[in-house]
Length: 503
Image (cartoon, rainbow, N blue to C red; front, side, top):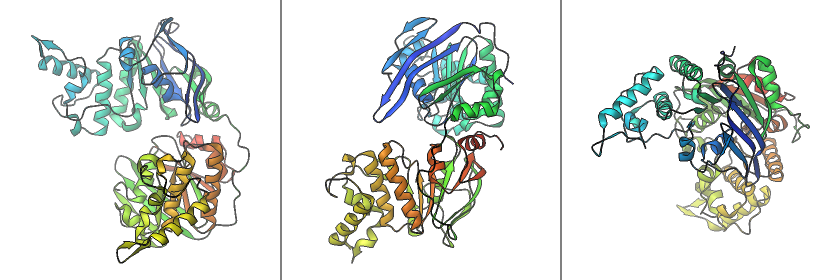
């Protein structure tokens, strides 16, 4: 149940009118209207990519909208920088931390506003201010400790204290509970309630619907860059909110599902990582594409990185074709037949200034070596064959990978793992940032790879993609595997599990 709103609930403190924002290939926001009342906690919810964070970045001055206006207390304002936002009483706590690791907790909290005395920074006042803000949060953190020595949860609390020290009238929190739990989370809720009761307005972005039902007074739902509804929580239940977040019907499968899969190829048993992943067990069979769905922070990418050895795991085993893969080593994972198409192809999947040929063969140079020398003719034949198979559109294999379109870059990443003869292919957001035509080609390639006997594990935030491509769907929530759905599952079923509900 939502907590009772303070007395000034009818006054509009913030109004964003007709906000639109276009990025290359993506209409992130389309004519968005958004209002926040004085003294309310207003939840902003939607699927991954709905436009929530983009709207808040425009409010913060981190980016500029293409069109639209912002009003504070019914007066038009210009917000061209974060400094402009702060001067208007807008404080934002981003999910990505902005602390300076080498500075102390006290220095971070007062950063940009150091108290002075006789021309020098007043260290005593700095420490007192930091302690007061942390006491307001109900936490004890050594204000003289370096930020680099803090736990992730402590860093989040210091981020919040830093913004509270600016005395904001409007506080924006982007997934503040992603790294908090237990007592810390309860303290945060108590602080937000007190701030709301003092007339401070709060915009709360979260994928945890149980939290927003408990904490917030009103909700705005975004989908595909647009606002689809804004109403009090008293008019909603969990299922109704999920329906508004999804709001789409799938137009059939995106690829044909071929035959029955074979035996288990990838076996994950009780893989976990302290503070990130609860023990996860799953199977992917030969010839099968398994979708891994969930909201941001659910642990999907973290699981993929643990499987591939890019991140350490606290326990559990990974087995490929009956052979246990040693933990913590991408090299061992590659030698065991695992390929990993990472979420960020530009920084982790490719070396943009190297050629297409060099990127394709980078993970499998041993296959082309003879007496420690690369056989260039064999390399050229192999790369041309893969480029033809994947229909990579490039002037030649010698052009830099960075000159290709997003879809062709993704094909080069896939070619890299096909060159290693990967039996297991993990794809993290494989179609992010590429056009519709290129997406269809990626889907076709995934199906072809599976039909040749590989096991494919696909992470995607696009629910129509998960439903239209995958043979089975696994759903994660808060670091745990919470459900499995067959072909024919609906977006509403997936979102219900992904937000902590029960079917």
